[in-house]
Image: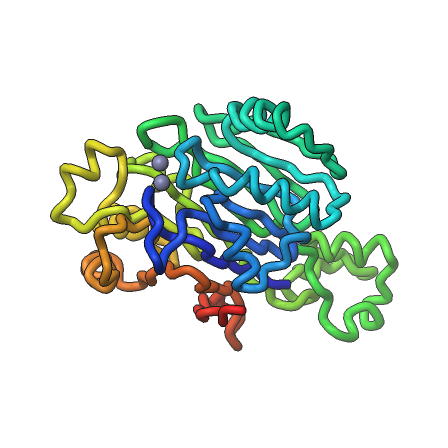
Amino acid sequence: MSFSVTILGCSSALPTSKRFTTAQVVNSLERFFLVDCGEGAQIQMRKYRVKMSKINYVLISHLHADHFLGLFGLIASFNLLGRKNPLHIVGPHQLKEMYFGMDKFLNNELNFPLHFHNLNYKKQELIFEDDKIIVESFPVKHRIPTCGFLFKEKRREKNLKKSVIEDYHLSIKDILKIKSGEDYLDKSGEIISNNKLTMPEKPLRSYAFCSDTMFKEKNIGFVQKVNLLYHETTYAKNKQKQAKSTYHSTTIDAANTAKMAQVQKLIIGHFSSRYKDLNVLLDEAKTVFEKTSLATDGKQFDLSYDKENQVVVIEKQLEEK
Ligand SMILES: [Zn+2]
Ligand SMILES: [Zn+2]
């Protein structure tokens, strides 16, 4: 089952002709989340063939225009497209007020249930869980209350090795116990370790989204050892003062977070519109953390497995429709 991140927009406050404002789609084992919804996110979804109907959750990190202005247009389009499934919006509490305030004038009847859920900006909190994944929010440090998001695959059932069932004459109850990780006590009283009975496990995959934030040591704990970290990089290192006063990060701040958190790969994004050539930012970040990639609109990062069952990050630029 796939685990991927598709960048729809990676510009900070001002969009450019090449970069839309923040939005991305996280596919975590076929559960689709839209993370932030900057202006034009739905146009980007069409351009890069993201199936909008699959999105059941929209997570909005904070109430700055470059992270949520596309939300109301998206809800209107869902309605026009005949959506019936519930849509969950997880974000600042003001979003609900804004939506219904606007709706009073539009007098539009929604054909699907719309649920608003408030983010907790004080502490880490579980915002979604099912049998396969969990999603958590965690507070970061920005000018206004802001959350990052963490997507984690849950422990899977183990697969039994071939012929184990016959060799040990296992009952259904035994099989379920072994699949959950228990050792097996055979008829002669010998303990057979779980490793001998089951296939090697593939490591569980994880992704963290950190935008917008200044460098904060606490963030490192939240994103510790994730496979993939998206971290805002609004400025180059020579704009450290500006980054601090606006509660944003530089290339070095993002790379230091990735290094200290021992993540596998860093994606930098949320670039100031002043930067035409993003390689300047990439080169700077790489001086601290080599495994850094640039976000670009339409780039997809896929967390898959190599032959040794290790997690690898595969990047590709999606074609425009
Ligand atoms: Zn922003
Ligand atoms: Zn912001």
